[in-house]
Image (spheres, rainbow, N blue to C red):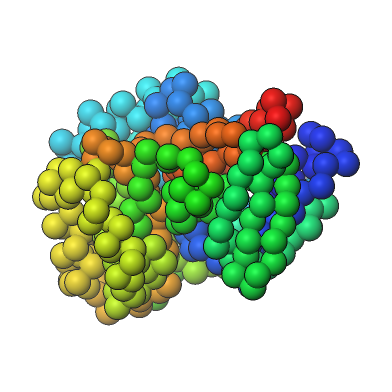
Length: 383
């Protein structure tokens, strides 16, 4: 939706059609996340994630205000609970400043001033972080784009003739022809690239993020995060007070057995066969097994999950946590088994493929949409 929005503004008069598999917008990653507007503090200076997040957070906040979309700039705490985390916390301070983000360092005695129920030995406060209604943002981008949005339009075949254009067939037999195809298919992005005849050089591996709702929301005023592990591209179990006052706790990160595996029981033989045939997945399986084992344990054991939460919020008990809806992250895995850590946007003849749109993709929707649109216009110009 953000690419369509950017295209119609960059090239007025361009006809844009969005094919959305689901019956409504934001049914997957855009609508299954913690709702956080990320500041960009975690990301390597100069990376696409850092540039897009810092710019995107400011633009998204302005967009929400302009269109009266629910949002709040709450700020967040990143809290160290163990002395071994202090070097990483200090590194985050430096990284934030390099990215142009205001960061305030706090001692243990200052943490309760912002979050009375949270305990730690040190923390940093990031004032530009907030929360918003990403489903509302997606709908508004669709409405404001001027594009034709076709819901329930699942792409099943792509025929490309570089000299002429692209033809796309949807599941109901409809054929659409265009000068260029933009692939922003998220969990199915690599599949669509292969349909078009391009080699994505990656495979999407789905990771399910499981959340709980905190039944004592008074314990959390805003956003509270642990110090992340730099060896693993997930941010750990955190506490998020959403725009409706609900406090979500999570997520963990466990491999899902289907691309749309929102429940433990969800299973796709086709998805699993494809993953097991990919050498990158086998390389991945051999690497972060210690971290992964802990994630699986916390998925299966509420008591183990609660213990992780109690490092930040000592007053929480297992009875205070109620299971909530899960999300699925589309993680691109490269052929050597490494996890793609930044945005991957590839061009082919008449095609532009977004092959990895990691967090903070929702925060960065507006600048990322412009970046994709620029590539599309370049493809159209060369065609």
